[in-house]
Length: 326
Image 1 (cartoon, helix red, strand yellow):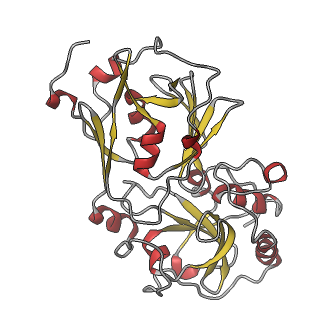
Image 2 (cartoon, rainbow, N blue to C red):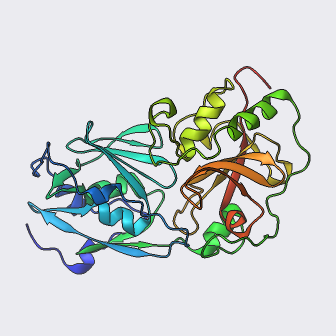
Image 3 (cartoon, rainbow, N blue to C red):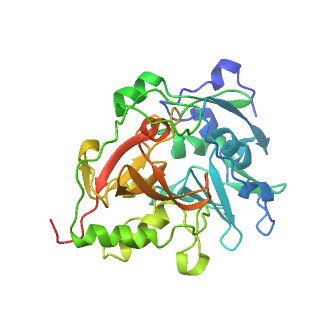
């Protein structure tokens, strides 16, 4: 394979991966179908700190450039979970947004099926993702530059976040401080449906959190999106599985018009270029939400939203409406 110059490898995040890299994709890469990946792939790489930047090393297998999913998720502070039965791996923040299958170009992004230019492989107990597939998965959300030996991920500029969300300065980690009350609630919806929803949601406080949790009757656990899906389902309101899809359901509500039963969506500061929904919770009144999260209690819990941490990450609120109702 002809060696490219350093500058020839540089590709901005606003563009697709270079033609040279895409051409380097080949179905001839080695595949170990029955191998068990490194257990580190099931580790929790997420952090409460504001994400800054990071680099992922490129590994070449049969002249094809790859990155390991372990390295990618550690750098981006994403959670991941391997499913041995289906040879699939789920990636995301508080809930799965991407599902990849080893040995297949079939993938899922925000609940929608897609095709990758090159399939992930399993090599030396590591799941490897072709560099040419990173653009298909992440170019709309992340800012990165492909270089000769690594991929450099950079934070989205602060001004872009403010322009998109009109949210204040980001903080390093959650605190108990009361923020500037950008998220405000006036009044409370008293009709039975909202109260019933909140009452049902409270029943599961203390249930454990598990990223990419299987359906609750089977797993006995929730992640951020499966929890909301489950409680709304029992009130006759179907929600999608991914947070990105849930964020597009219902009707948008202004922060000063929140009512019980509204769903609040949050982003990870500086990581995404769009208003990417990374977490969500159910508003239950009195500046509180109930949500499934791994911290601080690792399970379904109640948190105040009038804090610096949640104010800085607030994206939008949606009012979910049952089919046929107004």
